[in-house]
Image (cartoon, rainbow, N blue to C red):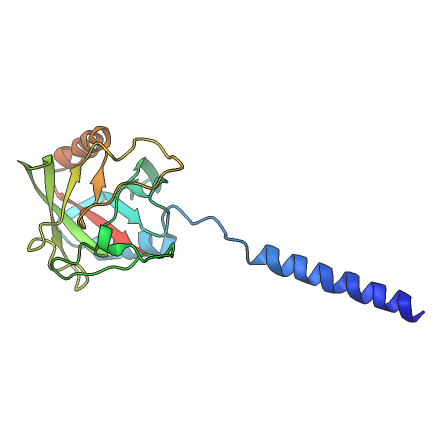
Length: 196
């Protein structure tokens, strides 16, 4: 009887361990947080920004996966998705976590809402200036944080991490052309919201 009870107890312990380890497995990260969509819709109300389309970057998603989303705020759906880099300074050694900063020469990505400002052609070709609208990214213009492309950014998801920037959200040359169509066709400026 005692050995039978020990066996049952051992099985219960194993089951408990199994279910506990299963519950701690990483859950897939949501493409765009529903809270972020609601927050941005509320932010846009009564402002002279595009009310229909926004761009989100979810830095919780690994850099080799789609984590930039052009989003239709009216229809509630993703229109386009892309690989996007983060700053080399955002990397934490021996960790999958990222860190963020608004400080010049930190080479870190900054979080928050940006106004996608004027288009220009610079050292990386076609680029869009970003005006930081939050305390967390208010130095974006001073830091020359812009949307631009670089050929090391892939068009598709892969097993390799995206190459790193100096803090700018870099896209593939092909996807920058896609984003350009949305930005150029908008009568009002589009908001980009980067979060973690």
